[in-house]
Length: 472
Image 1 (cartoon, one colour):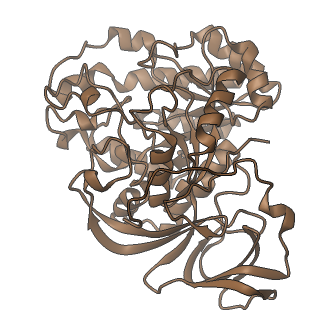
Image 2 (image 1 turned 180 degrees about the vertical axis):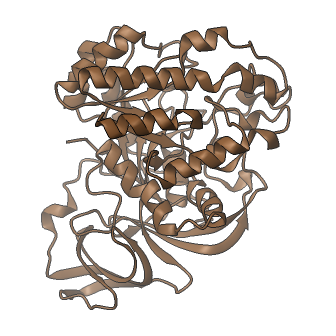
């Protein structure tokens, strides 16, 4: 881990003017030098000049910066064992604050994110109370987050039955898009959309190029699947078949084609859907897709009965499915990797009974995503630059989070110092997540985040300095 435990945050200025306003292209208050850095064009030696929290110059391949350092400029020389990365962007995080903050909260979640090299998250609209389905609830969530954010935080809105009229006001208020379910969400206050409601909301969003992000499992297929309860993971897997995802994704593709709207498939689990996704993209349909570390790390065959720490929806599938998902990333059918950090209390995981049917579904990995994915990618000969692209620039592009996701002039000076060859063992009790239970407990991983820098300042885990982000 890259930081010591710290006291609860006290305050932050979430409304401060952008440091970009005062940035100078000629004088730096921070210079970072690294023999290895991941840049948009690939890996290179780099010198980065920062002013007012903004990247104002990038010199590559041994070149020197043309600007000058201010009298009190700081210099960071990155250790030769580390690689300078852009801060990661995680666009799929359930913070659950307010209302269910015993599950997680903005202070604990953003600390965990920072410890994992993440400098911006986009918070999901459900599991908090109230859910973010109108401007009033968005204002409540922003007020709660403002004093607790250790990194930058943006927000998704929610699309539920009856709130089509709230979508444009939420869009104007700065949410990055709208999440919906096509199957029960697990919480009563966030019901799923019927097919006609899905089309209606996409038609509404198409008017202003809004984005609908979809939990794609089909209710009718799920209703006909075997009912699950008990300790057997195989029974749980059968209760949420691939066909539920495949049918739902086909429905989203058809509705996006019909309306011309942007649509995004959340947490892709079924590799069977990859051909139809690839065909839709080739057709020009505005479709993007994400998957998550747990689908790229675990296989159904290795999950013990009763291991409800591994329950998530849609579920972890077989080894052959995992390898097909990796191929989908390599060939570009899948756009990005995000955590789907979906925490709960240990009691809701029913660790004592191991009942997959009754346990809360969700895997907490906000702090662990980069080493988890890098460990598996390295085994497959995949370059670190590809992993960083999938976890930084790609999610930033999908959600349209501006000035994040790459080491480039004009972007925020957000970085992670990453030791790619360091090996360490995950201990759930050492994580910043509020509930320190983890499917990855005792797992040895490769790659360790040594330091995270937010707008030119190292995150120190004692005073929150994150900003609240607004789209557009």
